[in-house]
Image (cartoon, rainbow, N blue to C red; front, side, top):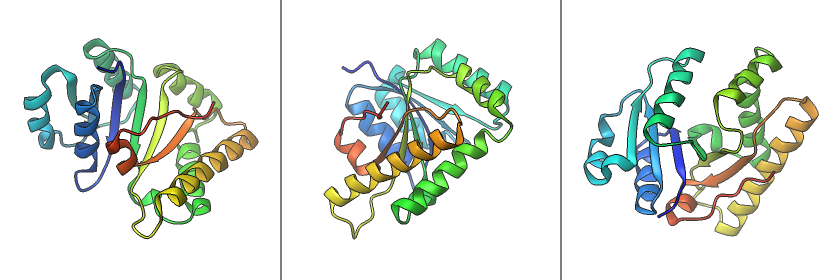
Length: 186
């Protein structure tokens, strides 16, 4: 049994459910956030208290604070945030890094004080895992290298911008389902 507590958000075509199922089978505890939590009923039947589907209809600071409080109260402190990036994760390493960094910067577009406020709402040691679909035409080793390139590009751009960006790890959905270790560079 692991002591990892995951919060999963995003996903298309059941990717979030597949990731949650794999994590739960591996012994993790999972909070899965979405606009419709009905697809996760079978996971609740199978894993009982190890999974917490959370319907999120608003992303206001108050709603996100309540979400965190609810997850921590029911499951404990989140150690990993898995964000399924969908189409944002398609393309060359440069294109993907640019889009993902744009999203991260957009989340902090209200100023550094707002970003710092968000950082206070979530545990500082939690890793941000950006989950993308594997490209069918790319070899596994090349996919790993591309993901490492995306991580480095985001890290360098964040340093240059001065924005406080958490430690980010880019993985494919298939890697995580197979049980690949998740260690974000610090």
